Length: 603
View 1 (cartoon, rainbow, N blue to C red):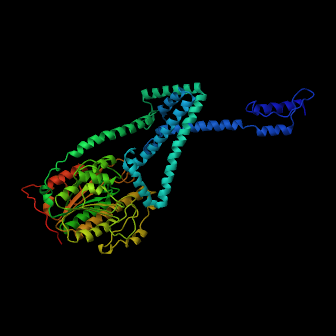
View 2 (view 1 turned 180 degrees about the vertical axis):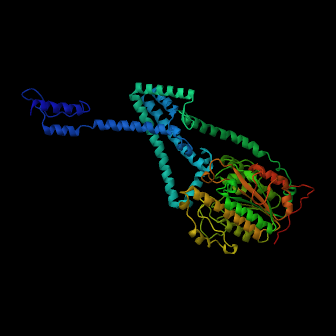
């Protein structure tokens, strides 16, 4: 072998080795010229066993770039889905990143890693909360409350269970848990990777952080915007974290405010013989129609079938001797949280979050139910959507609570609602209203118009309802959730059909079973999700009072509600918490009324 070839091979081996100390010593022997002689076999073996330094450098840089991109994406991530459609969302400079890098450079190695881990985990949790906000804005038109809203995740699971079954719901739950852990873990590792590289290249990193901060300040001062009026100088994550912390503090302050509100009750000391004198001898039903919002009546995409049902229902009930008046209430919730609306209406206190609800149900506040009970009515709740014990019933003042477990239903479940609304009304008539009874106060939240709006029951002849077994075939023929939720137009159509089904059931019940002593107040609890009505819809819901006794409606003449089952656009809108006191005032002693004892049970 010539000397030049041997020297070239030796030089190549030296270049490929990562460090002289780590490179294995090649087998050598002195040649006549004094150079190192290496065989072709030895050279090939040494080259193959050398560490792939170039590959490692590429992989290391890729990890660093990936970590920077992940942290950058988390910092500019919006918490509302619609903002993803705006190009300006992605062209922003997050000041939090530059500040964090600066802080990391001030610390020694060990503490730098600790701070990076803490910041990364915090950013991961903030990212998870932004994702929860996206879901809450899409359904409830408000952000996720990190203190109060965990209870709603159980409702989300029930929704999935009704849509994709037990296995699908369980799989989705496991997937969410894994995803949350992955986000927090990856964000922590990304932050620690950036801290490590920053420590290795302190001068370049410091210059980059300072330059980025300077550009951010200039963009902030000049108000630079590139697309959709979105500023380039971003501080959204810092403001978001501050807002979340402030909301927790505001929640604690609201607790004191609520304690004052709940003690103000104009009817707390009213004697029993002065309560509800205008309804003595009546059977009063307060019936909630799930997701029955103003949009169902006024939105041209949703209302054709609903308006027809209401207009024809007004005429049908008029022939049966009934009259009605309708108005609007402003609900404390949107897209879900029905129990917040129920408690607001019955208690006369604004209940717009879970903390207020818990504080209310642990107080001694009088509700419409407890006041009817005080006045001598037989009070009950018929709750077809309830599938387990409901301790809050004691707070409301019910003598009896009926739910899906004790109403004899032998049919299938329809989506979220265990019982079809027509079955609930049929069971109530057979077992409560038709037999001899004292005057009643009934709260009845109907549920067939609850998401996912598939499958929907079909209205049938009352004599065919029976124990509900007839619904097996009806469900088999109905649409499945998976067939409608891929298309918002189909979701809107099926939502409208569900509202029409429940309203038809109510109107037909009144026509067939209502009598001179029947007084029904039916209303919506909240608007449906934004996929149906959009994000700009109001919180308004329709409310209607129906009775045969003309004197009942004369009591509410000064409410200025619209005649009939359909409220007009000019009808007044009251906050829902005002209804209790207005109702008690209108049906209390007036015009020389004298409270009279309740009559004995009727047949």
